[in-house]
Image (tube, rainbow, N blue to C red; front, side, top):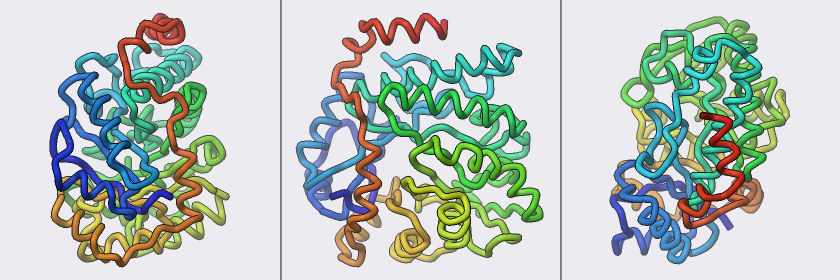
Length: 334
């Protein structure tokens, strides 16, 4: 059974507190950051240790999109920002091949050190407004993001990794960074639905998980999307027919503070429709939340989360990079 919390670690190895925390049934996920990475062998050993210490099932994740959001560098392929693919190729057909290849490469290399998922792709539109999205997005044009996003998703899926579309219903049209501010998108409902959300709608049966934005869209709801039953239950699940996993964005971000303290944030996000909530960079609050005995392990949620488990986990990146399938994708990309 997968618990509803995804937490993080302080360093390169597990400390005594983290070993105990992993035995807590509320903890069903772990996210790794650059501070956890020293080498490919070290990160593989860390992932093995996490699975050995965990009380039950656990999903290990990382933000490994490329460009400025690539947590691991040395020993891994240098992944470009997704926004550069079409700009450099100037040809949508070739750009789709590249997007497929980078999706496949990320899936192979991330799973090669024992990690289940990279939280990708970014399906936001680059409106040249958002400080936090920018070239993380494939393009500023809806149809281009749909085509490149579809290719990237297929690349990840074909090589054993489930995908997480973010940041639903679209973070690209607000300047504020939800890590440090509370963004508000004041556009009319029709504009949000027909532009930003159309990407998520068109690809709804292709990605396996969604991460909603910590953005308030007053034309639809007064709550940020990640805490909104209207966005997650009414629109995403009922209207669009999404049946996959919903991961909250980090509840430590400033955009989440409108929901109250950490207990309130977790309760509201889960009640709104999230299957798993992330709490990063705040170990004391994360520990208190796990120990509070206020959350519950939900059988239906756990069954959905189980589908995010990596299909081709390995603990030796060098071996994977010596394989024919890695060489084929590498040649295509270079």
